[in-house]
Image (cartoon, rainbow, N blue to C red; front, side):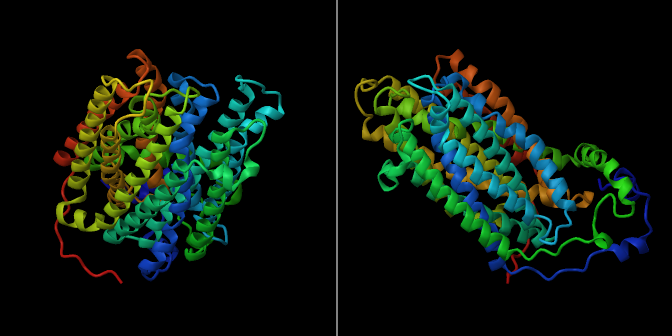
Length: 511
């Protein structure tokens, strides 16, 4: 149900305006942005995801090597959803109203990229910082503090950057829903490319030889490889951010045509209503959501209950349950982590291919149906991981030898197939929610913040519960994957049965 115009204006802190006033304040209609320009704008996802791939593949094992037990490793990741719960909606709200001469979204993208660079420098040098402040031997509490501090900055920066990136693409595509899907598919494609490069970087164990200065008294080979990988990340994020913000031709908002709650008020009044307007627009609009919006948010929540355990423990699962190793105990665990990173690289190749085919699939079968089928495929993959863990645990190589080739290939196949539902997760929900809540009159930045709530709240629950839950059943990763499988199956069935299929239309050419 659309929000009545008078109610929306009163909720945003200004008196209702006449239709003539609204017409005069309406910004000029912009020409359609060429697809090649959307492609360049979406390229920033490649740099962001390069660092995110390193974070996913290397940091859970590394934090355990610093001395944090497995059952508490997931708590470290709590900062991501908590920061996302507040930062991304707030940044979306602020970017909808930003009057910088550089545009609404680009200042936040650049600020987020700079914050990512600072964060990875802190994480990469956490062992050196701990050594500088007195860490010696196996106990490294100061390094852990530095690591956690940098990790929190990194998650805040990721949330600061990704929301405006997607909102910028939505701004550029306007009300053309098919073009919005294409733009999100581009974004997903560049995420796949960033993943491939990031996971390949994480799988390579010889970076310390190329950058020998990364090895120090406090930083051994594994630490030096991590540090070297983050140096590459800095170069990559700088290049892709530059290309993206240069390609985006944003029109700066000015006082006379801003869609803000305060453009009819004096400066002395605007500041007092900022928090009220933000809270109202984020939570107060919930009562106007249609049933289809709530279904999309529910499926998104179930989706991320499924994904987050895998993203937290994928390489750790490979090191522990397939290679039979433990952190800081022999080479099996590190070999498994590197093989897990290689599997995630294959996952990203499949993700990229799926992204290219996304528009055709959604046009033929409907976005909701494709999303639902992908969730069922995801549940089957998690079931396969449980079976593979059981088989590996009952073979006699655990603890003294490398796993058989067949077991490793089976694990890599599962990782690869999961690239299909991951590509759909990175694209379809954003296009669906953008189209559904457009009639509410929200800015695209805030709409991304609304969807983000359905992503980060499940992540908070998984971060708090997955480690203790796994420990309750013996300390492996299988219990969390079992919950992930059930959530994925439930989300898939809900999407297939409850999200209406889009009416089939003959595809039109996109210039």
